[in-house]
Length: 185
Image (cartoon, rainbow, N blue to C red):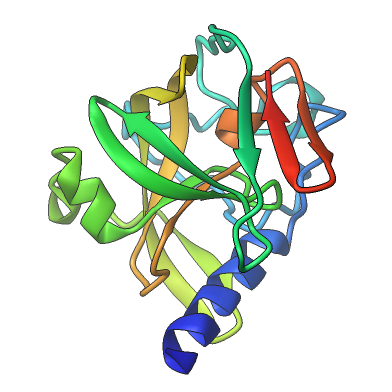
């Protein structure tokens, strides 16, 4: 149990290195998951810098739907049951994660052949750099609050849980925390 907790803490540290600002709606230039700026011909990931300094896919689609309220879990985090490309995945909401970060298990559950994705960069963890594989998800939907064409990365480390990061959260109209309730709108 302690090992799993430490692993989760390490992953949180990885994606929290470049804390993205929800208010500014863009990821900082030194985001935790840095895109490979080399000659990547992968058509499923952008290599062009977006307005405001963040990395974005084109076209970027705003969220649709209503309002979702998430209660704080016993471990003080917020979790959402997200429908990712038609498959239900339990995710921890992490505003410090630059992109949606999927575990290998969750990526395979939605039909991604992870080994067919090229390693296109690294994610920084407390234990060092780990390989990541980037992709664009067709849809991430949390109880009717849907975002299409969401940037994501499969992290080749034992994270324990996938992370609902800024590539989803920044497309919403609002993300608020009041007491033990997080509201996504």
